[in-house]
Amino acid sequence: MAGHRIFTTSFASIYPHYVAKAERKGHTKDEVDQVISWLTGYDDAGLEKVIADETDLETFFAEAPDFNPNAELITGVICGHRVEDIEDPLMQKIRYMDKLVDEVAKGKKMTSILRG
Image (cartoon, rainbow, N blue to C red):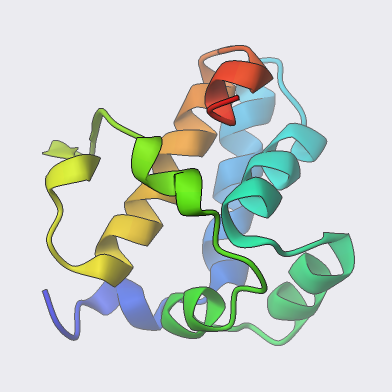
């Protein structure tokens, strides 16, 4: 999947969709931020900066302050693919983030989402 179009998509363009998905299901922006922070290590200021800078997803993950080593515990299907079977490391990280936001929207307990 080298050079996939999603890699050059800005985080700022997908973030509002994540928040809207969670809010439609009765959850909050703070919950979305919490799972993204758990996965990537970005704090609130860091997220605001990558949004303001319109950082693309490739850079977003390459510069993640502290990508969580427990991310490999994220399993399941997202966009028709099992996240644990995705071979491209960047695509897998993007799908990990998608999966976490899906779990927030579905109302899973945060301890379960954060693999605690």
